[in-house]
Image (tube, rainbow, N blue to C red; front, top):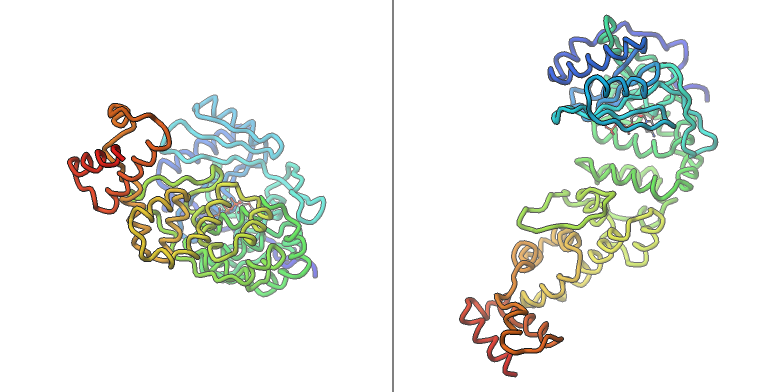
Length: 431
Ligand code: CTP
């Protein structure tokens, strides 16, 4: 099969989207784009809004990242902007890109990218990047809907560059790769196709779908754990991860990662943020709360052995592995705790990550778990170690035991006020 989009159809549309830009972006953002564009023009670098920004603009969705690609040296431009307007700069020499954080706190972070060509030394390898033209830059991309640019400098402001007919595919609600080897070059694009399809209510077009085949699945199965895990992380950031996981499983892409992923149920409960009274949740540095919760709920029905194999394959941070295993174990033993007193629940749950307790609460709606998170975990006796010392008790294991019994009595409602606690303390201290 040759190019999916024949070359002879690649023409410029002569569409100008200046009005759409003016209508969709707030004035401070437009002003920022103009400032960057003027600076770029002064160097003679044509500059464009590209990729996701153009796609989301056409779909009338909020523009989260502002990606600006220029035919020229992005690092030189970024340095000039910092010199003129201040702000912070991060430079990635190897990729000819720079990230500029302007000084004003409500200003977005700008990714400034030198137009580039990408080649893959072998299937699934990270691409080799060389500076090039806008046309090459659009042709290196994943899908037609992500391969459009709007020029923003000078008199060209608003001009659409759409050589691969992305606008047409937006209208047809279609996800289409640019060439038949796209998923072999980079099989994470299979995940991306499903993400976009579900997010926008689009369909992966049939020729593209056929490219999810044994060849691309094989390259996918050889990807590093970090790259694979990151694709799931992004799915958990989406409003409806369950539908995406289901579609990926139907495409048979999980089999090569772990057979249990392929047979699992997908209906995750909504990834709700916990109430503020539920206390602090420790999550790994590299993951958000939502991603950590998504993983925990996704794998909650697996055995400890399966979780460990998957965690190793997908390079889980240790904290996440622990949270998932704790949640899976807690869910299994939950029915045997039904008659437990609050103190028994509390002493058991105190040893588990709060994330695990919360995840099991979401799937079981067991009120003891929400009581633990909102109240019980915070219950402490009034008596302290210093009070025990003042009573002439020697510090040691007995100390801990007395404090534990005082806490249990509070949790179970046997001690309700200071007097109750003093009475119990006196009897415990005398024993
Ligand atoms: N891209 C690609 N192949 C990939 C990853 C990215 O071609 N494996 C290109 C796409 O053109 C994409 C652009 O790089 O539009 C930026 O990537 P990214 O920030 O991941 O995507 P967004 O388009 O911003 O989409 P999202 O809203 O999902 O972040």
